Image 1 (spheres, rainbow, N blue to C red):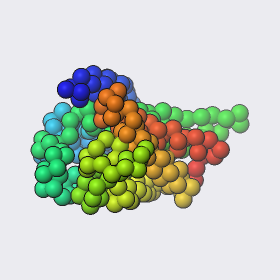
Image 2 (spheres, rainbow, N blue to C red; image 1 turned 45 degrees about the vertical axis):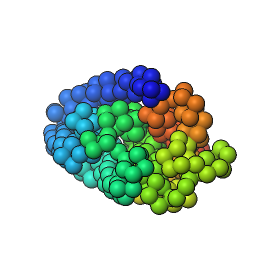
Image 3 (cartoon, rainbow, N blue to C red; image 1 turned 90 degrees about the vertical axis):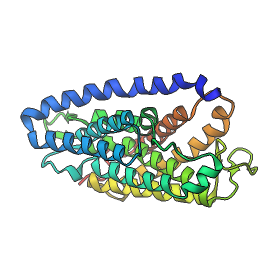
Image 4 (cartoon, rainbow, N blue to C red; image 1 turned 60 degrees about the vertical axis):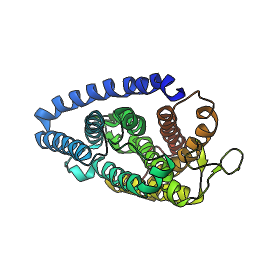
Length: 294
């Protein structure tokens, strides 16, 4: 009953994410149709293909697959630069995210079914996809076609540095999913972050050592994929990775407090934790806004 009463929060996240993303994709597609047709067709083709693959693999509902395709296209457009290569866009960290989270969701499914915590056989919903990846997409939008001209008339491309908070958000989403899915199988009885008391698996805000380590490893993998995509260096990786780890613990804190008392649902907690990861990475980057771009 409590979860149903908070469904409006999931709908609000969809409203926050999808219209702006759709407008951004339409604008960029129109621009690339004349300036870079290859980038346009590669981006749209691969995004739609990934959406279909997710649906056929039952990783998401049809609406979730369509939402994922839209968000992937937006992320790819936001990180594309000349000379265009699909692998040097956000496609690479998105693929890492999809593979890692899908494997974690399927890991130990029989035990999760017994615990009553297994993901629906239909896969994730559109609101879950938006809650996990929507903030990363919104954070990356300013990177698309953003140029800065300094007083000397030298044009500096700012797209890659601006992708730091978006990548931190994406890495946090991977960390959160993996820590929860793996922790339910290998973590034994988890404990609450706020009280350190043991609780049942699947309890909001509960963490385990195995799950946390798995989540941190997932964050590192996605952050590394994104750093390679952007020709970044160790400093850029650390910004993304540190932001993601901060967001992972922030998610548990929100789950143990506001989610447990019924103020927020899981979609809201996931969305806010990715926002926390992005904000933390951005605050760390404030002293060096151009982290290691090659």
